[in-house]
Image (cartoon, rainbow, N blue to C red):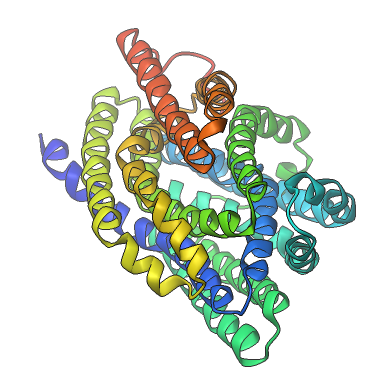
Amino acid sequence: MLFRQSVYQRVWQFAWPAIISNLSVPLLGLVDSAVLGHLPAAQYLGGVAVSATVFNFLFWAFGFLRMGTTGLVAQEKGRGNSDALRKCLLQSVIVAWVVGFALMVCSPLILQWVLPWFNASAQVLEQARIYYIIRILSAPAVLCNYVLVGWLLGMQKPRGPLVMLVVSNGINILLDLLFVLGLGLATKGAALATVIADYVSLLIGLLLVARSLEPVAGHFSRAMLRDIRAFKRLLLLNRHLFVRTICLLFTQAFFTAQGARQGDDILAANALLLNFLLLISSGLDGFSHATEAMAGEALGQKRVDRFRMVVKATGLCSLVCAIGFMLAFGFGGGVILHVMTDIALVKEQANRYLPWLALMPLVAVWCYWLDGVFIAAIQTRMMQHTMLVATIGVFLPVWYVSQPLGNNGLWLAFIVFMAARGAGLILVYRWLDHRQLWLAPGQCQER
């Protein structure tokens, strides 16, 4: 009964620093957009939008380094397995560092292959290229930060990621203003500011993790580095999250590319609205992170009753937050757009499609919340399958038949895609819960 009474308090205590730290990321994007949006042409904003889409695809393709780490650490924390906590951290950091350097080495080939796919104007593509060749230098830091954030969340220390992101993003914003508006570096300045901030975040994260490990029993050992089977298990566990993330990023990249085909002004308007969507998703992800950590710990303790209490509490809190976002953007979105850009045509286009964005929180809340549930339970196969159905079976067909509607059809396809994701996860959750499969064998527990 005591746990039941305190679960909502624990959810909010966990969620508020996670929400603030998450919100700092899209707020940074909004500052980038605002700074570039006040330059004399839309090509700067459009170029960064194209390149940022490429980086979202490249980096978040390995988002399992955050999500998988949180689920594993939360369950091992519930079991009290300190050696497994250290091994998961060490091996995940090594994987992140290797992948990050591989992305840097392959960056010329990636750039040559990806940019023509957007079919944007030559001016926009040139700005995208400038941004890309500088921003790729932060790849190792970005992927390692995913691991550190995931580990801290799994240990139920959400203030760690808050410190990492708020400090580094604050530095990024200041450098944005200095490099872009002060020194006139335009796209180069925006990219350089982000690279510096990513490495600052890495340094802060390493210090926070080291402090968090002080009271944890055990120590790092060379055996952890030589455990090739454990490395393989780590990669195999997250393969479903990898496919799931690729589908999500493909959808977002496809959305941006199709907007680019309709002109630079549509591309820039969609970029502004997608920054708003990132703001919404980051806020809702605060409760998803609470679900991952708290529900994962409950399953590690084999307390399915507590798991269900956490799921219910985080679901209700997520819904309240979604309604707040819907009202905020429904009534105040136009004012925000007015502040974001001085380019009249971009502002006009963004206002035209703002109602789609205002509807999005109430549609998308279910998939964000249930992502946290399935990560906590390490049911990643189900996340992959529902995402494949939503992408191939829903998003692409709806976009195809709604092409005559132009950009409205593109937004329609995207919002139906989010609804399909949530509906699929709800059905799978009910199926697993009815059959009591949350603690079934094959849950990838450390033996």
